[in-house]
Image (cartoon, one colour):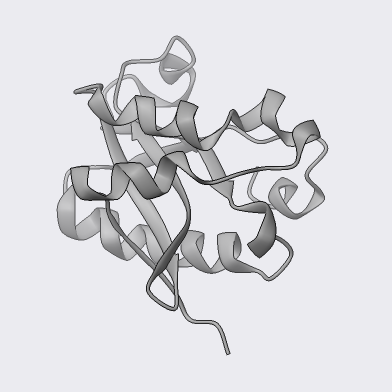
Length: 133
Protein backbone atom coordinates (compact mmCIF):
# COMPACT_ATOMS: atom_id res chain seq x y z
CA UNK A 1 0.00 0.00 0.00
CA UNK A 2 1.33 3.42 -0.94
CA UNK A 3 1.12 6.20 1.61
CA UNK A 4 1.59 9.65 0.18
CA UNK A 5 2.54 12.68 2.22
CA UNK A 6 2.65 16.37 1.44
CA UNK A 7 5.26 18.60 3.03
CA UNK A 8 7.22 21.78 2.54
CA UNK A 9 10.34 21.21 0.49
CA UNK A 10 13.84 21.94 1.71
CA UNK A 11 16.92 22.73 -0.34
CA UNK A 12 18.08 19.18 0.38
CA UNK A 13 15.13 17.95 -1.72
CA UNK A 14 16.16 19.81 -4.90
CA UNK A 15 18.34 17.06 -6.41
CA UNK A 16 15.54 14.51 -6.11
CA UNK A 17 13.04 16.98 -7.59
CA UNK A 18 15.32 17.51 -10.60
CA UNK A 19 15.24 13.76 -11.24
CA UNK A 20 11.43 13.61 -11.57
CA UNK A 21 10.34 12.68 -15.08
CA UNK A 22 7.10 13.09 -16.98
CA UNK A 23 5.83 11.60 -20.21
CA UNK A 24 7.02 13.80 -23.08
CA UNK A 25 3.47 14.93 -23.97
CA UNK A 26 3.06 16.29 -20.41
CA UNK A 27 6.18 18.44 -20.36
CA UNK A 28 4.64 21.29 -22.35
CA UNK A 29 2.07 21.73 -19.58
CA UNK A 30 4.09 21.14 -16.42
CA UNK A 31 7.71 21.30 -17.50
CA UNK A 32 10.26 18.87 -16.13
CA UNK A 33 11.70 18.12 -12.72
CA UNK A 34 14.53 20.50 -13.65
CA UNK A 35 12.02 23.27 -14.44
CA UNK A 36 10.17 22.66 -11.20
CA UNK A 37 13.36 22.70 -9.13
CA UNK A 38 14.36 26.02 -10.72
CA UNK A 39 11.26 27.63 -9.18
CA UNK A 40 12.51 26.87 -5.67
CA UNK A 41 14.81 29.90 -5.68
CA UNK A 42 12.01 32.39 -6.38
CA UNK A 43 11.18 34.21 -3.13
CA UNK A 44 7.50 34.49 -4.16
CA UNK A 45 7.12 30.72 -4.39
CA UNK A 46 6.58 28.17 -1.65
CA UNK A 47 7.65 24.73 -2.72
CA UNK A 48 6.00 21.45 -1.70
CA UNK A 49 7.01 17.85 -2.24
CA UNK A 50 4.84 14.78 -2.48
CA UNK A 51 6.37 11.66 -1.04
CA UNK A 52 5.33 8.04 -1.21
CA UNK A 53 6.94 5.52 1.09
CA UNK A 54 9.45 8.25 2.02
CA UNK A 55 10.58 8.84 -1.60
CA UNK A 56 9.93 12.10 -3.45
CA UNK A 57 7.55 11.27 -6.28
CA UNK A 58 6.24 14.72 -7.13
CA UNK A 59 5.88 18.34 -6.23
CA UNK A 60 4.44 21.73 -7.01
CA UNK A 61 4.75 25.30 -5.86
CA UNK A 62 2.43 27.98 -4.58
CA UNK A 63 3.02 31.25 -6.39
CA UNK A 64 2.26 34.24 -4.16
CA UNK A 65 2.89 36.79 -6.94
CA UNK A 66 -0.12 39.04 -7.59
CA UNK A 67 -1.92 37.80 -10.69
CA UNK A 68 -3.98 39.88 -13.16
CA UNK A 69 -7.00 37.58 -12.71
CA UNK A 70 -6.86 37.95 -8.93
CA UNK A 71 -9.01 41.09 -9.13
CA UNK A 72 -11.79 38.96 -10.59
CA UNK A 73 -11.73 36.77 -7.49
CA UNK A 74 -11.24 39.25 -4.68
CA UNK A 75 -8.55 41.89 -4.85
CA UNK A 76 -8.42 42.18 -1.06
CA UNK A 77 -8.01 38.50 -0.30
CA UNK A 78 -4.77 36.68 0.42
CA UNK A 79 -4.33 34.60 -2.71
CA UNK A 80 -1.83 32.26 -4.35
CA UNK A 81 -1.79 30.01 -7.40
CA UNK A 82 -0.84 26.34 -7.36
CA UNK A 83 1.50 25.75 -10.29
CA UNK A 84 3.41 22.98 -12.02
CA UNK A 85 2.12 20.00 -10.08
CA UNK A 86 3.99 16.98 -11.33
CA UNK A 87 3.98 13.33 -10.37
CA UNK A 88 6.83 11.21 -11.68
CA UNK A 89 5.63 9.12 -14.61
CA UNK A 90 6.35 5.89 -12.70
CA UNK A 91 3.81 6.90 -10.04
CA UNK A 92 1.02 8.39 -12.14
CA UNK A 93 -2.46 6.91 -12.18
CA UNK A 94 -2.40 5.88 -8.51
CA UNK A 95 -4.36 8.80 -7.08
CA UNK A 96 -1.29 10.33 -5.42
CA UNK A 97 -1.88 13.86 -6.76
CA UNK A 98 -5.48 13.71 -5.58
CA UNK A 99 -4.36 12.52 -2.14
CA UNK A 100 -1.82 15.37 -1.96
CA UNK A 101 -4.44 17.97 -2.87
CA UNK A 102 -6.70 16.62 -0.12
CA UNK A 103 -3.92 17.40 2.38
CA UNK A 104 -3.18 20.87 1.00
CA UNK A 105 -5.84 22.91 2.83
CA UNK A 106 -4.89 21.81 6.37
CA UNK A 107 -1.19 22.28 5.59
CA UNK A 108 -1.60 25.74 4.09
CA UNK A 109 -3.84 26.76 6.98
CA UNK A 110 -1.02 25.80 9.36
CA UNK A 111 1.78 27.61 7.48
CA UNK A 112 -0.22 30.47 5.92
CA UNK A 113 -3.16 31.19 8.26
CA UNK A 114 -4.11 34.41 6.42
CA UNK A 115 -4.38 32.64 3.05
CA UNK A 116 -7.97 32.79 1.81
CA UNK A 117 -7.82 31.41 -1.73
CA UNK A 118 -5.72 29.09 -3.87
CA UNK A 119 -6.07 29.28 -7.64
CA UNK A 120 -5.22 26.29 -9.76
CA UNK A 121 -3.86 26.01 -13.27
CA UNK A 122 -5.03 22.80 -14.94
CA UNK A 123 -4.01 20.93 -18.08
CA UNK A 124 -7.30 20.83 -20.01
CA UNK A 125 -6.45 17.32 -21.27
CA UNK A 126 -6.06 15.94 -17.73
CA UNK A 127 -9.51 14.58 -16.92
CA UNK A 128 -8.59 13.77 -13.31
CA UNK A 129 -7.54 17.38 -12.70
CA UNK A 130 -10.63 18.91 -14.31
CA UNK A 131 -12.76 18.19 -11.26
CA UNK A 132 -10.77 20.81 -9.31
CA UNK A 133 -11.73 23.68 -11.62
